[in-house]
Structure formats: structure tokens, C-alpha cells
Image 1: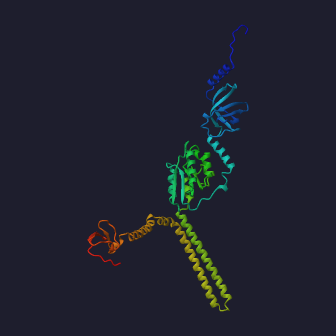
Image 2: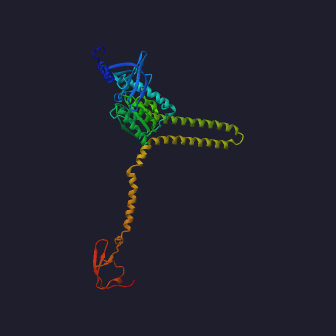
Image 3: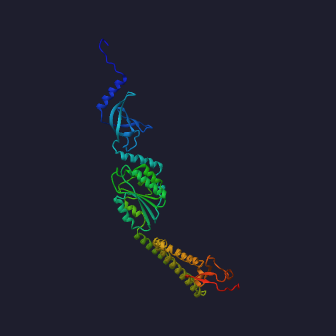
Length: 427
């Protein structure tokens, strides 16, 4: 105006210029602040503000950039956001397009761990009343781990020294990496579906928090909590804790300790039997001593009334009860020893050779019966079958032939040919 040429911009042109300037100047910035007004759109995009005591900055975290996010953003969290400044032209709004988001002062994995731990704790998944005792003598063990891990070698070395275990099955899975949670979850669900194992063991060796993150995955933890099989979690070293440790029925500090918790060793079993024998012996001695004291009392009370006969009966009672207690002790010890050998007895009884023997005897009997009913069996005893030579018809009476007619005679071995010279027609 005033005679000068004025440049007139459209709204869109101004917004484009501002946007270009912002994006060129602030390509890679990091902003610290507190999350507020957090919203998760149905598209998966996240919208929130970052604020401090001096102001507020709108932010958008598109779904395509949030794949590596390790925690759940929520109002009140102090975070550091990295991205570029831009202008949302449709609303003329200045905002930060977020590409990375990390909690301030604590790692993302640790924050995710604490968030999920709090959630599951409030649901009661860590409650002590949910914990089930392990069977004392489990027969079949399911082991979910990696074949390549050193933890498996140490675990199996100890497991072979335990008593009563008939079989174990290893479910080979990845124990770290992005595919690990899905594989571990599916293995837990497979063991739960089969319902043929007595104990489920989830194990791997030590590592960083990131290495162990698969065992903090919500899907894995919930699958373990839902399993009907009593479980042991032995993940990492003694100082390592995962959410699977909290939800399992038993937490072992190391894979080696897990193997010792599954079943007692041979030495422990022998010690238990020895202790039982000692307790039974002491009980027997105590009962015998008590009966002796009773016997003395009876002797004094019956001294004036033919105590000799009554005393003899009392002595006999003591001997009878002592013998009964000895037999009970022997039976209990024998049962315990038989229990340890039960597995071998079962295998012997289940041997295919043992099962085959009755069938052989039965087949032999059937062969005998079949031979007895064979149409030519009588021939073996000296009988013969006579037929017409021309037709092969079996003859039953001499009345059926004519003089001079040719006959065939079947013997047990071979046959003869004859001609009728005479016949006796008597029946």
C-alpha cells in the first residue's frame, strides 16, 4: 500500500514456509519434560504434551516409530523425547514429531518391568495362596530352555542324581531376542495342554536385563500363571529377578538349584529311610520298655493270686506285640526299598517278551485244535478216503459201486488206484 508493491501470502503458504524453517532448523532435538494429556488413538498413534514449569509442547508419536518402545507412556512420567520440530498445518499447531522416547532417570526396560509388576501384583498373580507345592517324587519333567545354553548342561547333570524321575522332555526355545517371548509362551501352553508332566521347569543362564527381558513379557508371565502344572522358575543368577520368578510356584536362584528342588537325591532318600528305621526302632524299644513296666506292676498286683499263670500270659503278650512291631518295621523298610525298585519292576512286567509269551501259548493251542479239525486228520491214524476214479465223488457205502469200477484211494501220504472185483453190501 502507499504505492509500494505488497506480497500477499495465503495461509497455506505461510504455514508451509514456517514448517520448512522449523524442520530445517530443528532436525534432531531432544526435549525433557513431564507427560500430560496422554491419549492412544485407535490407529496406534500416541498424542500427548510435554510440560515443565515454563510451558507446554504438543507431541505426536506415530505407530511406525514406536515399535522399539519398551515401557508404557502415561501421565506424570518424566521423559526425554527425541525427534524433529514441525507444524501441523491443518490446525496451525507447533509440535514435536517423536522418534524415540525414554524415561528420564531410569531405563525403559526397568520402567516396563516395574509397571507390569505393579499391574500383576494388583491382580493377585503373585499371591502366596496361589503357590502349589511340588510333588515329592515327580516322574515326568518338562524343561523349557535352549539346547545351546550352558544352564541345561548343569541342570541335567544334577537331575540324573535325583530319585524317582522316569523321564524328562526338553522344549527347545530361544531365550532372548525379539522372537523369544512368543516361543516360550507357546512351549508353556503346549506343556499345559498335554497335562502329562508332573513339574514344569523354566530356565536359562544369567545375563543383562535386556537378555532376560523375554521372561518379563506379559504373555509369557500370564501363560505360566495359567498353567495347571506345578512350576519352577530358574532364570539367571541368584541376584537376577524376573516376573516369571514371582508368578511361578517355586523360584530357584540358579538352574542347578532348580534340579535339586525337583526331587531328593539318593543320599537324602537313604538318610530318610535310615531316620525312619531309627524312629521305628526307638518306638519299638519304648513300647517294649513300657510293657516291661506294666509286667512288673501286674506281677506285684497278682503275686498273691497265682501270679505264675498270669505272668506267663503277660510275658507272652509282650513277646507277641514285640514280634508284631518287628514285622511292622520290616514291612515298612521293605516297602520303601520296593518303592525305589518299582520302576525296574514295571519295565520288566511291561517287556514285550513277557507280553508275547502268553500269545505264543495261545497260538500253539489254536494250531493243535485246527489240526484236529482238519478233514484229512483221520488219515494220519490209518484211515483212507475212497472216491470214484472218474468223478472224484467220495464213497460212503459199498452199494454205490459196480463190479469192475475204478476207484481212487487217498492215504495220509500218497494215493492208490484200484478196481472193484467184489463188494459186501452188508451195512
